[in-house]
Image (cartoon, rainbow, N blue to C red; front, top):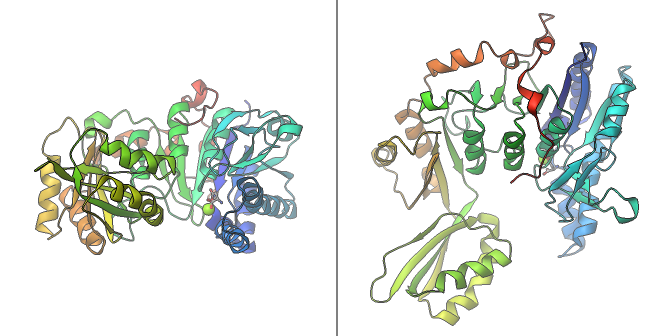
Amino acid sequence: MPHPLVVMKFGGSSVANADRIRRVARRIARARADGADLCIVVSAMGDTTDELLALAAAITEEPDPRELDVLLATGEHQSATLVSMALHALGVAAISLTGAQAGITTDGTYGRARIAGIDPARIRAEMAAGRVVIVAGFQGTSAAAMELAETTTLGRGGSDTTAVALAAALRADRCQIYTDVKGIYTADPRVVPDARQLPVIGYEEMLELAHQGAQVMQVRAVELGWVNNVVIEVLSSFEDAPGTLIREDPLVEQRNKVRGIAHDRNVAKVTLVAVPDRPGVARAVFAPLAEQGISVDMIVQNVGHGGATDMSFTVPRGELAKAKRVLEPIVRELGFREMTTDASIAKVSIIGAGLHNAPGYAARMFGALADAGVNIEMISTSEVRITCTIAEDQLEAAATALHAAFALAVPDQIDTGVTTPDPLAVPDQLDTGVADPLAVPDQLDTDVATPEPAG
Ligand code: ASP
Ligand code: MG
């Protein structure tokens, strides 16, 4: 039987210093000793990426995007080489590769490049030669041909995308995302103390959680996993405990309930007061924002009165100043009464596949918020989510009330049924010397397609 092929990704906090790098190396060495072929993906150490960005900003207000990407890619070069050295010190054959060496090509968009293709030939050759391959995450090259090649980065948190894309390209048996939390929770445990870890979550629900602020995994990585049907396991790099599986969830229909509460503090609200109520005005507001790359989220416009209406929307908090700069001339030109902004709001969402065809969730959500004395400012919905914006200082009260109202602390009976027969759900027992879950052949990944850039 061929060796199982496992992609293991370690985030920045897992490789933050030499001790942690040695610890990661020991974990890799154990998995290797058990016979797996390993492709490791690493993020930059700790806050390295932020520090490099700050350095560039100290040099110039507008760093050249090409140079910035080359600079940022070095963060992952550091951690990849150091993990490789730590493995050598343990007597494990290993080699680090840049994203380009690993065969990852992207489009040419600096700062948020999309993966265009992966040629895993070099990775396979290194594995065949008995080496553990350590790939620098978060980066690729704009062209396979050397004379055209430029280093690109995949956007913040992009190492997750590297890992999932490699897992798909290598048809890996497993894609493990090691991080500083134990898995995916029903809510952020720092905000809701009785939040519970989920043994399994469907792609769609995970995607919504990630979109709505759960920072465990990059949104694009979840999309890529969904498209390619890569079963992703999120687990702690600090303790040996079962993680959470992100995969197609066949029981989603039967669960038909709220699976989690997400929150996001990284929002600000813009309100345009007395906007003329006529065709073309919304375009005049949102087209320039889009041109400046400012992502607008919840948009609320009320029924017009006397030829005018108010319009509110949210933007990421860090982009509020830019949004104001873009909109000020438009407000003047089109004769709005005024523009007000509020940066002390937050979003709180309930998420669950099946919300849309089960009435009553919205009423229950609004009721729970009312009972907790939380005022709702804006509401938006999708098929799997209801989101409210509220005052940021009421976030904990709101999330806690919703967690209780939807009984999320109580384990779902169906959970037990779905995870037990699944070999991937077996906790990693490499440490205890008990049966190796990797030895169980995996049916799920056989139809993995070549990776596509995430939708
Ligand atoms: N180092 C990059 C970042 O901090 C990529 C990653 O961590 O996944 O965004
Ligand atoms: Mg990071």
